[in-house]
Structures are given as C-alpha cells and as structure tokens.
Amino acid sequence: MFGSDRLQRVLDAMSDGVYVTDGNGITITVNTAYERITGIPKEKLRGLHMSEVVKRGYISRSVSLEVLKERRPVTLTQDVSKEHQILVSGTPMFDSDGRIEYVVTTVRDVTELLKAKRAQEKLEQLLSLREQYGASVSTDGHKEPFVISRQMRACYDLAKRVANSSAKVLLQGETGTGKTLLARTIHSYSTVANGPFIELNCAAMPESLLESELFGYASGAFTGASEKGKTGLLEAANNGTLFLDEIGDLPLTLQAKLLKVIDEKRFLPVGATSFKQTNFRLISATHHDLKKLVAENHFREDLLYRLSVVPIELPPLRERIEEIPVLLEHYLSHFNENYELDCRWHADVISRLKQYQWPGNIRELINLTERLMVTSEQSLITTAQLPIEIATDRPLGREGCPLKEQVEMLEKKVIEEALLIHGTTRAAASALGVDQSTLVKKQKRWRIEQKRDLPNDEE
Image (tube, rainbow, N blue to C red; front, side, top):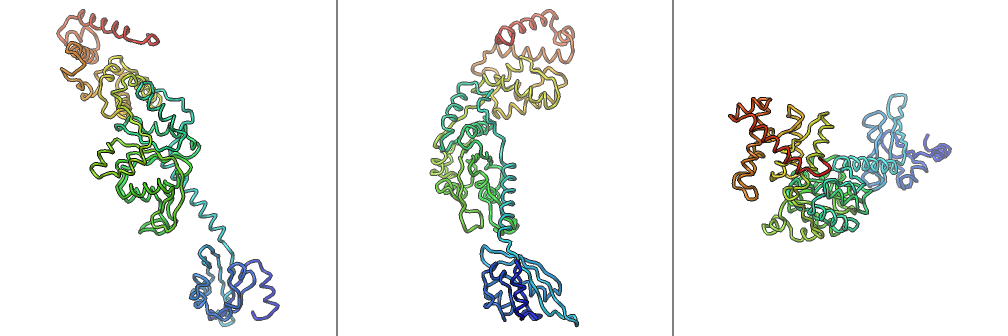
C-alpha cells in the first residue's frame, strides 16, 4: 500500500511531516516535509526498527512504539537536535482482525513555538520578580521634604553628583536612617532611571535560598526545583539598579560569587552550564562596620573596595533634630488619612521627642506615631501618652539638660496627667495638693513660652 509511487507523491505534497511504520515498528517511508523538518534523509530510515532509530540518535523517543504499546493515538515532543524539537502525533491503523497494520505519524516543527513559550514564561518570571522585589521610584527628584538638616543635605548632594556615573555606592548608617530612600533617589537621578529598581535584603533569608534568588537556577538544578528553572535578581535588574541592603550579612561564599559578577558582568545560574550577561547599577547598604568585619574575616576586603567606590555615611536621627518635627507632622498627616483620624501633637510632645535619642531612628519614629494615634482616646496627643522608655529617656544629671529644666519638664508632665484624669484645673489642683491659682499660673506661663518659641509662620 505505502510502497506505491502515487501514494508517495501524495505524502510528499503535504506540508506536515509524515512517518509511517508497519505493525512491528519497522520504518516504511517518510515524506519530503519530514526530511526537511528533521534533516534526516529517508534512505537512512527505511527498514529501520524504531528502537534502532532512537538508538542511533536520530530522535529522542519514538511515538510509534508508544502507539504499538498503548494501541491508541499518542502525541509527544521529540528532540531531533539540541535546539530542534518537533511535535509528533501517532495514530494506529487496524486491519480487519483488529491487529495494528500501520502507524502513521504526523510531524510539526514546534521549535520556534516552544522558544516563544519559554520567552513568555521568562518574561512573566521577570515581571513577577520585579513586582516582588522592585519598588516604585519617584521620578521627581526634587520631592525631598525631610532633607533639611545640613548633614543629610550633604549626603543627598553627593548622591546626586555621582548618580549619573556607574560608580558603586555604599550607604552606611544605623538601621532606620533612610538608606533605602537615598538608594531610590540615586536610581531616579541615574541614567538607568527608566529601568527596574530591584531591592534585596541580604539578612532576610538563608544562604541556600539567597543564592537561588540572586543567581536563579536551571531546570532540575536540585530536588524540588521548578522544571522551568528560575530567573534570578541579577538578571531581573539588567539595565536597572540592584540595591543590596544589609550587604554585611551576605555569606562569604556568595561574596566571592558577587565579586566575580561585578568584575565580569556575567553570572552562572545554579545548576547551569553557560553564563548569562547582565549590566546593572549596584548600590549596597549596611549598618555594620565593614572594616571591622574584614578584620574579623567575616567580609572580603577586595569586595569592600569594589562596593565602596563612593561611601556615604548617613547620620542618625538624634543628630538631625531639626528634622524630627517635620517627620512627626508628615506621618501624623499620613496616618490621619489612612485611619480617618483627626489627631494632633501637643507642643510638649514635639519638644520631648526632639530630646529623645531615637535608637531605631526614622523607622522607630514612624512606628511610635502610628502607635500613639491608634491608641489615643482623644485627638490631642500629650506627653502623658508617651511610652515609659521615652518619658524616662533623659535621666537626672544628663549632660545638656540642667536640673531646673528637668524638674520643670517633670512638673509639666505630672500636671498634664492630672488634668487628663480629673478633667478640670480645680480637681487636678486638689489631687496634687496645690492651689488652683498656682496651677493656672503655671499653665499660662508655659503657653506664653510655647508661643514665644514657635516660628513666625506657626503663630
């Protein structure tokens, strides 16, 4: 049947490839399209059993043998070379006795289709990574309402000067001083401002997971790995900025790999055999003393030199006292809007918080503001609501705060608390064992002093 020249001409006229075997899996013929798609001439295939075709490496597996085994139509993909894949669908033809007489297989080249599918999956991974680790960065670099202290202005001025270069910047400072905000500002002023801003906290995950997040991994790289592989952040940050926060917590093994990426602008995903190119602006940050870590053999000296081409030290909030009232008002407004509140600060609270040491810096200020607002039973937030650790932050005899001033601060706090508890000056004075007139005079004097100390635009 399949040996006739007329039937062969019909098969050769088809655009899809056709492969025909008998009921024993012996190759009878293929058409011209199959030869074109696979690059295998029919002379090499005729008379070969399908197991021999696989053994010789012409195809990766045989759909015809699967059809003979299952006695039903089967569809699968075959590799005919390292980068060439075909979709094959085999169909059995039965004789009158129900035996398989022939297996006819149709073939389509799906190499480009699979490449497009893989490209789409990779794009989806990139977008997912950028959504997970990326951050929206304002393109308006002039919106810096809190950079009013001389120390922070110097930091931002230096950051803007180096933003257009490819120099690596190391941001140093205590936790919560605003290193991430400064990194985003550098990105927004840089030549890659339109690219992604990818942020990774090196202290937030274990070493094994950190490596796969940074470098990605190839398909089947380890037990439990996705069959599709995974795109890493080094690739996701291409043509953008990679911000590695808490770089001092990066394990030594990964420090060596990161150093190689910086030097060669390429990396090897976990389990892969070929390198990937990448080009990104690197900004790193830490609250650690990296020179001390180098001396303790916890950080590579050569990596420190690569990272700190431009080191910028951010001062703690306690050294930027003039920014504290502005920050407090900003986050008061922010949480008022979020929680639909109408809270406001008592002037003594602002004064007290300017004297606080803020070990947690801006992050602590934000958390304290939210805490005081959501727990307050009234709109006016007073010193009576401050946590004990803040109320007692300036012990007696502390340098820079005379005894008389500390006594007066304590007196104001006690009177405010009494007024909150008892409601009237008469009841508060009675509870404190003083005359009402004395209490009223003190209040009046404090209000005059407060008004005198206010800037002109707040009077």
